[in-house]
Length: 116
Image (cartoon, rainbow, N blue to C red; front, side):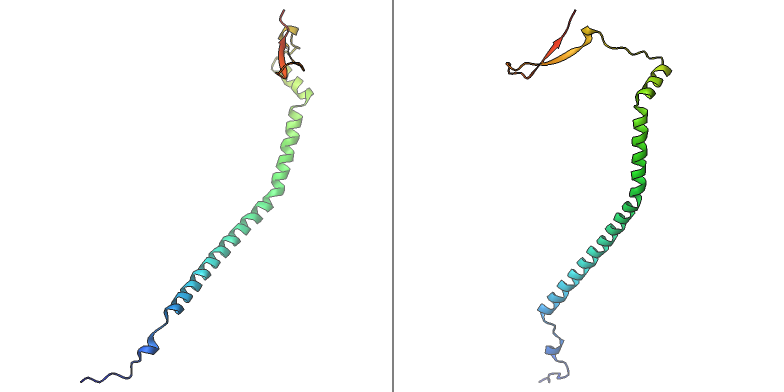
């Protein structure tokens, strides 16, 4: 009969399944934490870059608002009308459409056009 090799211990070589599960769970949690941390850092860098660009954008908005206000001013509109030989006048009475409220009717407003 063959003798059992007493140098190899089966009990010392086994790692409990619970320990493997806990180690795997910790590894997944660590990888998840690192990925969240990396994404958070990237978003932080993007936010700082946008905040650095904000004063320049505010200045550009103010300039465009000033330019638009100047462009739609009455003297500028008159100058452009003269430049393009456009003559504007008030409409005739027959071209005016008035909205008149009638309190006794179901419809709140009626159109009245003066036709001549």
